Image (cartoon, rainbow, N blue to C red):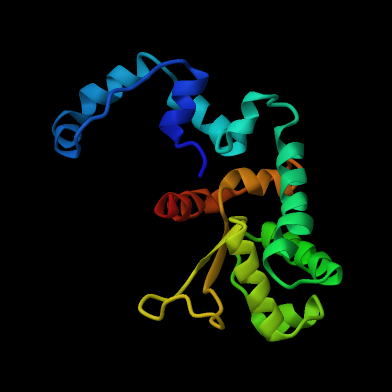
Length: 191
């Protein structure tokens, strides 16, 4: 798991916020908001958090963070994945293509037939690729309510695990636009 937005502010702004009960927040939200804005600028920090604040390795070097994250994804695909799942190098390259396609259109609504044809794999392999990428915490599938996450079920939508991955996979040139809220809601539900 990565840092929450509150943890990111604590690390970068060196300011700690005390926990507040939900009931207290509801009753005194204006006072809390004024107190926070008087100490830090949440919007400024939030933009940074979305780009590079989830994984703590940004503390080593913010400028090389996205490159390091992309390299970590690549390393996970070629080293970690084959250690856990029976997968060939050719399949890993097809997973890279799949990940590129997903990252260009987040949230991604998979058409399994077209997608499996495009990356030249069977439907079964494509569903496995989704599962493998979920195991690596690179993507997160959103499955229909009440149907569970069965082994051969396709997700309704696919999200990257956190918006930081969106920036890393797009080479820092990401524009999530209207999808940011949906990405963050999906990310927060997991963590």
